[in-house]
Image (cartoon, rainbow, N blue to C red; front, side):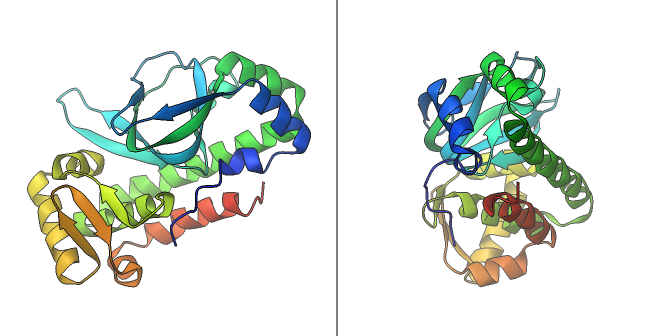
Length: 235
């Protein structure tokens, strides 16, 4: 089932006191598809808690190629460790699905975290979950086929979307996966023939989750377990 937008899971999981203090210094920030929040080497001036939509952290190579390092939905935030110490980003943060967020100045987040152990635990737990996901993705990118990684990527995006339709071009998908457009097209056609998805004119519609999950690599289950742990407020 896709997530129903109710707001950011981390904020929802805070104590009333911590939540009130954070929301008091947060500003609503709506974003459109393709919006770039930060570029590599930028100072992280704001932490963005995603309430709805999807943001990708994209690693850029000198030769122009790119690949998604991870994606963030309402289970997390973007801005990395800047809530602990002043930091620069190593990736491009770009919206792959329009949505809304709450942004907090990084310096204000550091002030709040310094005064609240429970807030530090929530933020650090998400950072740790993200680190585990990155470790899993390293093995995934090295071992698993493009088609299985594509199916995994679609499932993760679908989990964070409000419906079964995703607006994504072949070029965008190729950049996210670090693959050729022809490879993505072949994978999409195979999944379409199996009845897992429908793909036309940059629109991917998930038709059968069961088939799509069977087509994905084992890493989907591993990374979904991380997100589910956060969603259950095991923090």
